Length: 200
Picture 1 (cartoon, helix red, strand yellow):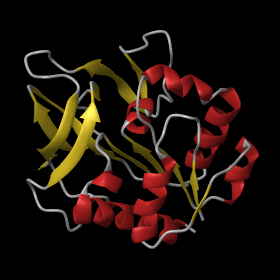
Picture 2: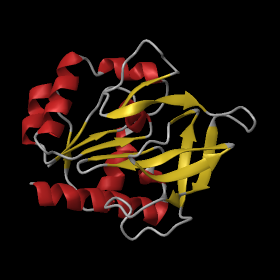
Picture 3: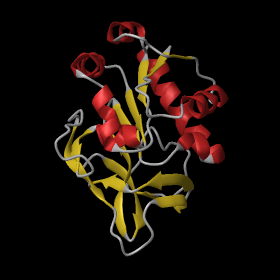
């Protein structure tokens, strides 16, 4: 079972539908201790980085503990930004810190927020992007994005390039919304489910 974290900042209905299309069964833990039975953890999110303050010390410890036990962690949109050390959108609020680096406001030379379809420049093979072709379009809606760090497996350019997909051995993140990105998005969700199944 994959745990879908509800901290009041995500469209959980759309995410659930996306994972259902990928053949996954989700549950929403009410308490941090309920993560103990998760084969994977998903942190979704839309909106301002300050919303992640609801992921308090207990939730952070439980999510970090799951990751340390080898349970795959998947951040979507704001959830990916939370994987980093922090964001300039709320400089005093720390992220999970699982990836070194920060999220910064997109350059104002083009319209911000960045809303709509844009392509993925795949930098190297990854489990999350298995079967995804370079140039595949994904649906974005955001004003801040992550630095391009060694964890980036794909970038996207909107005035300037940013990390649109990150991956390590058990950490995954996308700046876009796979649940709104058509067949390619469902393929990515299915790929994450496969990683979780192997971990179960």
